[in-house]
Length: 375
Image (cartoon, rainbow, N blue to C red; front, side, top):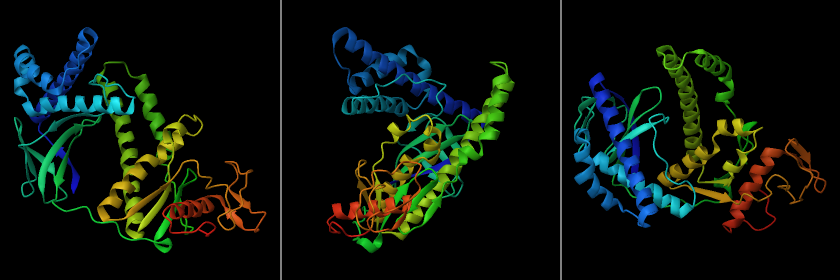
């Protein structure tokens, strides 16, 4: 299996300049290659391949821009691979035409395909063209080093993400049944409601920090553009956003790990999060709970540990069906948090009922439950 490990780097002032030089050179190469592809198609209706661009970089671009020779050549050529991947995604998904990169982007990065070494004893990583850089290697790993990505966030902190092939095979899926499966209904009032009745509270990190964030943003707006004080205020805002992001990621990792550890299978809904974000009344709250990242973590952690994630369709009426008798209640609206079934007189908590239905629908799809079985 290939796993990624992320570490914080502590470069010297000179090494920071070299990192920035690599980032700028890779951005320059990417933008140049994108421009060449656009011009070639507009002029001759021809598509330049990655290998055509690679030849032009080595024989033309580097000679015209000698400063590019000071940067690791493999990192430059990897920019062409990234561009090719962007075009492949564009043609397959029919959206998101590749854009020119800007130095104002929130995260700046460059790839180190090979020839870097990690020393856990000295807490250092050796980079080509840069040398030994101190790092906080808090977790050890074993396996074959693959590519690495050095990134800088908008606070000015440097990180490295290392992909490692540990040589292990992906475990086979463990068998599951009704007793070892849990249904999850995500929401805003409660982050997640489980079919066993457990409710995970929504931490609301963004909402809880909104007052402090507003003060920092107000200070930033009052600073003169281009001044050092404005840059300090910008970093203060960025640090607050980074804190919120770290809190959210920590919560998601702990929650998903607990769910994967305690269950053999997890049933969830397929949500159109992108469409839901168009509701301006709920967009901020939906962004704060980060459902897409929650589902993504469940998926890859389930692969790691041989567990199963079951998905039901986005149009399944999990909220409006009684999980006991199957009665369909058309009167349920978003404001209704509790309702009584007129057929079997069962009083339902809206979210627990939905979680039970999600579990039932998923198991029926796997032919592990017959129609009419309760969740």
